[in-house]
Structures are given as C-alpha cells and as structure tokens.
Length: 121
Image (cartoon, rainbow, N blue to C red; front, side, top):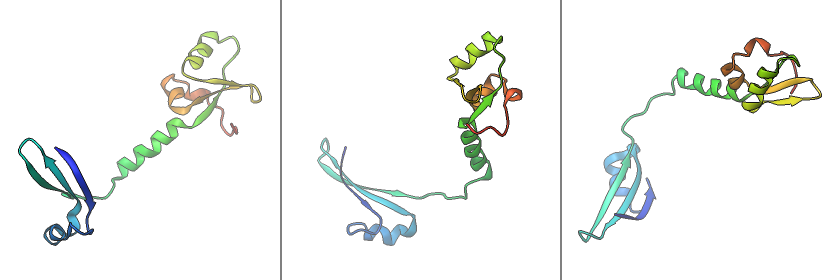
C-alpha cells in the first residue's frame, strides 16, 4: 500500500476525524491499495502520555558524562596501558603531558583513579 497523502491534525481533510478523536489525533493518512482497488484512510492517535521519568533524564545525563573527555595520568613506563588507551581512541596531549580519553572509555578500562581533576582540556 502506497501512502498518497499525509496530513497533520487540524488541516482540511482531517476535521471529521478531529471531531471524533479531538486532541488524540496526530495524523491522517490516505493510502492506495492497488491490489484490491481501494482507497484507505488511516489515522495516528495518541493512546498514552506520561511525564518523562527522572530515571530517563538521569540516563541522558550519564550518557553525556560518558562522552566528556577526561585527562589521565599514565607513567611513561606503563607501555601496555598506553597501548590500551590508544586502542580506545585516547590521544596524548603534549601541552598537558596527559592522556585524554572520554569518561566512559576511561571507566571501561578501570582508570577512574587516574583522572586528573581541574584540568582544562
């Protein structure tokens, strides 16, 4: 079935459905069914709404925190660890003399104790 036309609620051609479904109506679509030679009208309605839970907002904040770069103190002699950091996308900051890696990746490598605080990256 091909969609011929999609109209948002409130536009001409949707008013009779608007009367029936009121604020629940989102969209009216007209579809062509070539196989059965029919024109179909479908509607999209809102069936549930609830406030965004604090848990979902907290997850969004945590995801943003995971992407934020942190500076890590790694000794020159720790070659194996430096290789792991490079593999995870870490880069050496010559100005700071520290490794820079997103927080989430530093956490995955177990390097949270090596984060140097109050450093502008």
